[in-house]
Amino acid sequence: MWCRGFLQQTVRHVSSRQAGVIFDVDGVLVRGSAVIPAARRAFRKLLDSNNNFLFPTVFVTNAGSCQRHHKAQQLSHLLDVQITPEQVVLSHSPLQMMKSFHDKCVLVSGQGPVTHIANTLGFQRVMTMEQLSEHHPLLDMVDHSRNPTLPSSPPQSLPQIQAIILFGEPVRWETNLQLLIDVLLTNGRPECGYDTQLSPQLPVLACNTDLLWMAEAPSPRFGHGMFLLCLESVYRKLTGRELEYKALLGKPSLVTYQYAEQVLRQQNCNRRLNTIYAVGDNLMTDIYGANLYNRYLGQRHAAVTTTTRLVARGMGSEVMAEEEPMSAIQCHSILVCTGVYNPRFPLPSDQNSSIMETVFHGHRDLVPEPDLMEPSYMVEDVEAAVDLLLQQEGSDL
Image 1 (cartoon, rainbow, N blue to C red):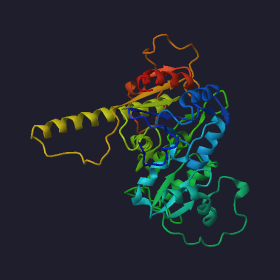
Image 2: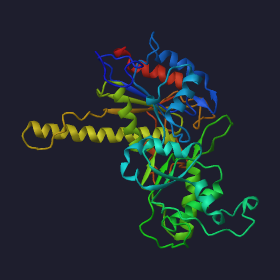
Image 3: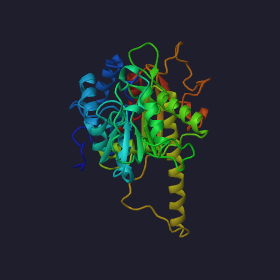
Image 4: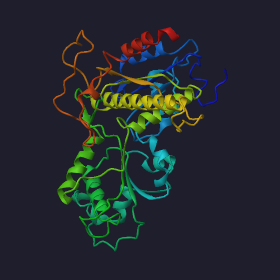
């Protein structure tokens, strides 16, 4: 069968293929620039004799300081596997779908080629924190070595900022916190004075809410979620109100998993996948998100089933568009112990044993539901996760 799509050459098409795989990157496949040894062994098992993936496969990472083709090149080199840009979902990837913001003047915060990233996603009028600071040098006063030594000329005129996009953790937190607060409390005109009663608040789109992430260091490092926590705290202290987000993107948001499933489905000739396996190392991000998506899929499947029965009985008028692809039926979460979650003691013999967390590290806007932080499976590393997947789907191989 010929598959229309961009990945028909990298994913072997089997008529009975019903499963897809989502891999986290940091803490699952790599730690910083170092490959986790089990990762290469895992992917040797996940490829056929022609080096094509046995299952539709996507790499979903909350990284946001690069573009998809750069991440694909990096992973291909590290894992010795051919990975295409279309198999990579970054925390900011779903911003492509938010077209109502694409023609607005947006202020972007983060590292890397943020302007180019924003342009690639569809944003046409982009302003960086550096550009804002250069035009208004008196706003950034924390670092005395960078303070203007001569009287500043009148600030140059800039377009009003209409939205804020937070791609990832910045380098100079103090500068970004100051300027973001300036923009929020002046309705996008930081040359003006504060108005702490401004309403409605300027739209904020935040990518990657990870509080912690795993690199080469023995302990987790601060992630973008830690910066968001600081921004929320400062905003609340100054205004008495909570900072509101127009969207929170990246794992564990539903929109990120919906986007990832769409990518998986495109690899599968736009045919539905019954089961998605999501492999990750972070209870608050990977496991919470996969379980939240599993709940969503269950509710959606139940609603569609009910509607189908009503229509069959002549009792309902709603039908799903014939060309609309059906979502998967379930999403299984698989926790590996090579990253943020790294137990001090050996894995329990009972894989259904409860994982107790005394501190909730998820974002403020996430409800701390214990059930959503219980993985479907817990294994040692990504090789064991692939072994589990192959065992579960063995009848289709």
